[in-house]
Image (cartoon, rainbow, N blue to C red; front, side):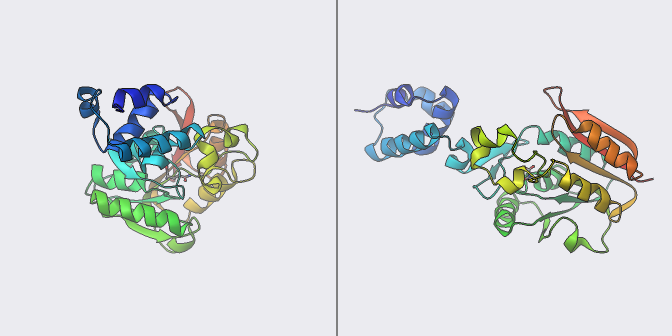
Length: 268
Ligand code: GLN
């Protein structure tokens, strides 16, 4: 007979990865697993786990294997059409929430799974939240998440500001593709399986940031904030772009690891 304990011990995986995949294969929670480590596992469930473990050993991200990832305390559905939400991005959400007045209009550019705008709306029902993405597949994921989590977010297909002509927002946020073309991280870990167009601009890493910094000037209400995520080594370049474009109160914030992660400024 096969037990959960045995499956975990023989998986050859990191302990947390193995546990999350086994919970998914057995459709049980962590508490159940702790109490039933020596129960018999049905052959079909054991086979399902073994197949998932093999894919994980070949590198596939756990989030894609189980189809979801937690962000800001909620589960978001993900698939290989969208970037897997990262804990660092919660900083961007917090900074936006702190700057959004009652009833403020916010937009997230390049929304992917929709983790940013959906979280903004669920944290603050008073906000009017919009989101755009160039990818129809990503928008389908984002819309599914908004429905599943009960968040009213306007979502549109758009290449950055293209579909937002004439619209003004109080806060513009984005976690754009900012990895430099050819960066070794793109060939490592989970990133190998994520959409390359969501990770890199296939250029110097700042191409999309330049478009966003320039374009936001035409879409920010007076005093409005632009906040965007970037790489640990892009803080200085980001501030220079913002200052050069006339933004004020230009600043970079660090993530929990102490790395430059978000920059922003406001238009006077
Ligand atoms: N906004 C999404 C996130 O932060 C997607 C970002 C992206 O694909 N670059 O996870």
